[in-house]
Length: 378
Image 1 (cartoon, rainbow, N blue to C red):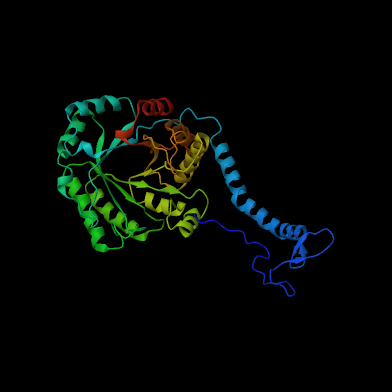
Image 2: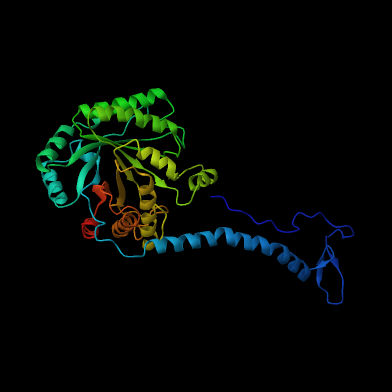
């Protein structure tokens, strides 16, 4: 982000008449150096009289709103949890490509079944892509799909195996999938049909970075819905977070060229077109666990307000461990996310049944993540 530079009062003033060639005049018995006829102390006082309002303005703009925002999130994280704000048996689990490319074996499947026993996980989003930039999907990317699907149905009755398909969109760079191209959208629909023909129970899309109010994306979802409804298969999507303040995505886009959030209205339009929507409620920039938990509570409430009762709403859990600008693992904990989701659910729509948590991701999860998920949600 660019820094705003405070202009120095008088800094561009031309040389006043009568100044010597050296640019200095000396006078007065005190021997104080003067510039343009003003004593040094006088210029400092004049600078402060004019500049203090700039300083005060910067403080108000840069410091006060974040402080109030942090306070609001901390308050959002406080309060009692409802006893009934617990699993509804509609959770999901993102799992990696190793499950369909031949690296996983029968022993791994047995261990997965044991891991999921007694949880509320109903859907597995198994990575079967990525899509090509033209929207097509080579079948060679998922050679062991039948082994996985049959194995899950045999050892984990009631759990569905959805193909997780994604690609980078050409929204912030020169390469990637272009949703504005009708041919590419048709190819994506063809890839969904291909996945269902391969035996997957449903299809889960994660296309990023996806800007708010993308009408081509909504058109794609309309076309995908026709295919999945005809097959009685779920259509699921991973969703960006919702503007924490109205217009936040627009402001960030104007400053950085990249939009992190969706408007709440756009989130609702997406949710109305799918059977499941999973919010990627991590990588939030939050530096403290209490702020992250409050943020998840806020996001849960915002999403519940616009997600129809006919759509499963899932809040993402960070089952991974990184430490960078966007994600602080000491702050973005599973325990904080679970508590935040429960708070948001209890405050906004405690009777809602079509609600769950989505765990990201299997190959980075630790025992502590599983323990926090079970303890907080079951």
